[in-house]
Length: 265
Image (cartoon, rainbow, N blue to C red; front, side, top):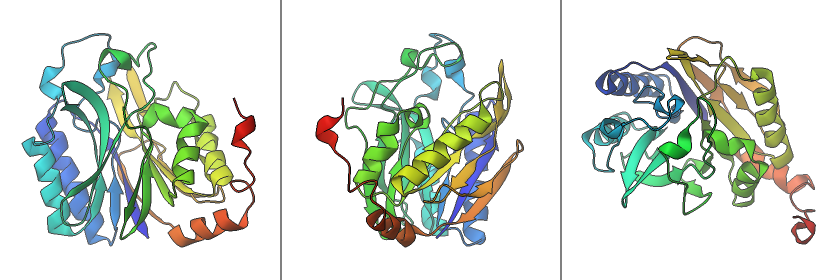
């Protein structure tokens, strides 16, 4: 399976970011990718770096024309996509990734579960935690899970989706150059190894306010081997991954099967 990570520099205007996303979908499909993943809150500047600011203009409904345009691009190019938006639903606001199929239908939604609250990540001022928890979406192209940004720091996140049958887990994120990039890479690779699952993390690039986003989007296979790694520039990162081998490896290795959850805190 060929996947693409759209490592993007985010503009100030939502319309510009939307058109860039549509162009990325077209380019990825033209190069044979079956799925494209985008960074966290891809249509807007990273507003959670500021505490409690009015950002209502960034909040999309599920029927917003921007979301429909991304769905249309998926249908026109016969490609799956995992965009991440700031979405309002049922009176709450979420950091939410969507899974859109090659017919342009939204077939999955994954909201951030753990919400950070610290300098430059004042996310509790903006996001409601997921009520549904972690999910895996069984599709014709494979079993796909999504872990949104901060959630990846909790090993229960990727472990839960692996237990639910994920063969590929996508991680839209917003990592900066002030954060431990090498450690974050190992964090992804070790969890991929421990859970025998492919994991792909897609980041932003560029300076936004006080935050300099680091890029270095990463694809790790189910053995914890890096199969694609970006630099700190805007780009489309392509990778070939083996979904069936992840499932077979998990069945062969004892890590999952020998768990004793009755003894865990």
